[in-house]
Length: 283
Length: 302
Image 1 (tube, rainbow over the protein chains, first blue to last red):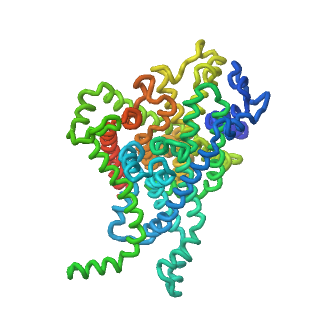
Image 2 (image 1 turned 90 degrees about the vertical axis):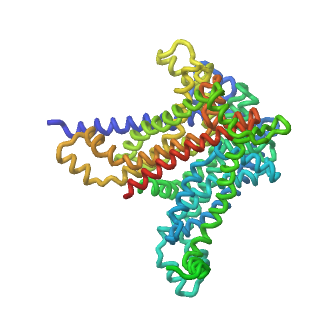
Image 3 (image 1 turned 30 degrees about the horizontal axis):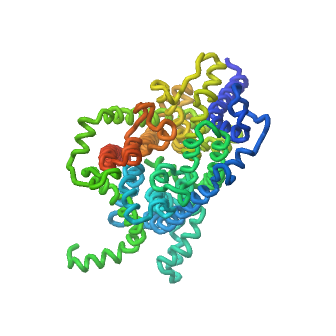
């Protein structure tokens, strides 16, 4: 006979050890980025690295934000504008398109679903060369507008799909009641359904924002000056320009580019995960 | 059925007009900004367009394809690399995601917190992932070499990203780190869908935890696994960012993949025609993957 208490204790130790390994692998590299960003240069290149900073400093952050250093403020504001534009664009399309998919079994429904799925697959290198030509022809190369437009090709299909899921949770009786009360169908959507699905709309919009903010490959080809370069392109160029010389400052810039995203994500996590997994699990 | 075509149209609009009007903006957007560029890409691939030479852009038929498939010394290496990269990323992420999901699916203290923290790599921008891993993998001051040295596993530092042999394990590790949380989240949703009774019944019949994992959990996770592996394969196939940030496809062409080849041909060498041919060939592969994926999902439903 096995001692069941001992067995349970061992099991629980094993469980938490696996959890610890998973978390160390997951958070270790990120923690190293954060720790390094608070170290002065001589500590960064020390032969025996430490997980704390002996001479804690904010100099790297001053360098990242300051006019004499990387001055990443302008890249942060470009990224914010392009991402906010993408988010609004996606919100607009998803609020109405998602509703259509959630409530109506119209002829062509299946084809529309397929198009939305394919749109998410044919991305990046598959469309970037013609996009560059198209943007040049329209005279919108190196603008925040072109970024919002190309990000839309990624975020709109996902957002429409996510919103159709969120709208399905809104009971049909709500709009039926509104229609009986003399609301038009569009009026019912705007005044009754959209407010009821507000948390889903917020999550979807912020997800579009995060997707745009985190993009590197489109911004790399479509922007070329401080006027429109995003934070991602800005940071990647710091590595190119500075090479080994200011890793601390580069790490600090990386932290500044990531922190807002982590906060947004923590906020929308619950709704987003629910929406993203719903489709995949049903198959 | 039947009737005047115009009357039929009127009926269609009355019945389905509202639904179509709501989805139409999305379709028009994708038509203009995605389907049109894709077709344009096919057209460009049949030209010799180059940004560095004047008077280019002439129709040259299949010349770019002939060059890539017959005389380009790098193309087949890059094609093979792309397969290795995509499969290694998808499978590697999966092998990390399964244990992570299993452990996060058990009863734990503060489980919600751990589930949230595990998503950090997923939301970290790829550029930040790039600098973080370049710094960890750095030959002189990198953390990885330091620990391997402390553990006595290596004597000389390894130049991870500069070695033909070590560069693949290095970039794949970075990709696993970035990608496994997404798979974990999907698997957790799959695990939540497995009824408790199945496990309880097996336990009563005397199945060990290992048996239960291989005979119950894994088969029941198969549908969601296929979906998420397909998603990972396709998204990896359409991204050059992580590899470009870590190695720029080097050393030499060792880690060049089709996405980086499109980028370098188009925006380093300005051969837009040739780059479009590479992009079109990539798109064909994605098309095949998409068809297989949709067939699979459909037959599963039936």
